[in-house]
Length: 123
Image 1: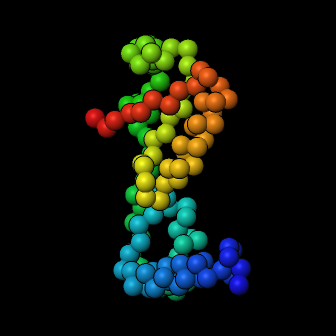
Image 2: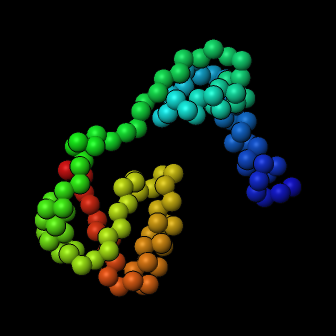
Image 3: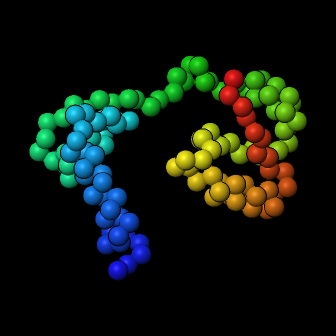
């Protein structure tokens, strides 16, 4: 039996559990309307009339408008004026590839000494 791919045991078990969860669902929430035509045809939802809601993911571009003066101020505050800054805005742990993200950063810093990966905290 293959270890990876659609014929693998982990894949088939995951798909079976996904199908059960979808079959038991009264509604589905997606992040975009565009994905719904594909999802509604998945096993467990196919030919069922379930509630579908979209939670849009977007940015208020007026609130997050680029301002060179603000960028310069923050870079000076963090002593990052001449550095290439990598920003990771995801969570740590869970489904995220934290170890791969850290490995990427370590390799990037070794390759380019002026790179920086400052740690941000929620306010």
